Length: 187
Length: 187
Image 1 (cartoon, rainbow over the protein chains, first blue to last red):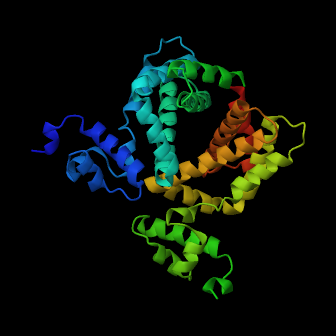
Image 2: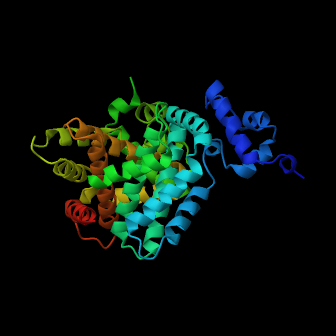
Image 3: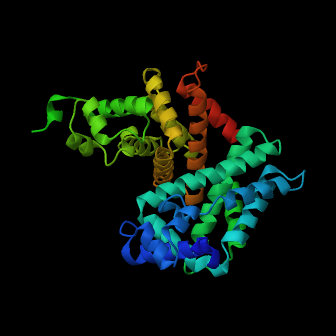
């Protein structure tokens, strides 16, 4: 029925097209139709994958589900901190690969330049922290401990991301994350 | 020149009118013109105070400035944690008063029900945390310490707010904040 049936990876192609257009013309001047056309898809396909224009630069909740799964899968005797650190590392290996670095850094620059996108990102990050905290509570971790652990983990990830995304950084994300977690916990 | 000249507290009246209308008709169904009319003001006055409809439920950056000022004003030998705790307490006494509680609780319910408002709030909260962290760095606190302190302070404030805003809570905000900070730091 739909064009998308013959065009695999519609989601990724829409994100890539959007990022190119936002960089070329600016976020405001780009429409959903522009993005769909650039990706060789229709507007209907766009809205099957994303609820609005902002959403095209964000994931579909896979990360939240992944991190919750990893926290649940940590050994029963792992401390809240170890469960979280393992999950963040898995997340990093899934998302912040060397191959995706160019895309991620460009994406971050576009987000930083647009208040609407920064708002959406802020809410997504809240959601990710809430998922970690909930997954820890489901392991029997008390609420305040779970929330503190999740906040510190989120902060360490942001610091690791900032360093990893520097043009001069030679570190992989796992290393950057381990260092950032150590520094955060030392405080 | 403007209508607002004869009508004091335009900002507060617009926020109050907006909150009433959002509760009555829903956020989506309320326009900026509706809000201005209900407040007995014009659209131009609205946009003199707020950049868009979302903004009407949020402050004008006074809180960020207040908290930065309080952190800067802490005694030179105060620890980062004490500087932050004092500032958060001042913020609470400024914002979370018994007289404003009804307004604040209704406002929070409206925000929780609307993704657009939750996004704006998430970004505002990021800004507040960044202001605390920056003010701490200006006291000579190292960056990672400043960021950890600010995140933990922000988390303690959220926990204190959640408890204070419960209908059954008899605590004032200062007490709730002190307890929440103790619990967060005990982790």
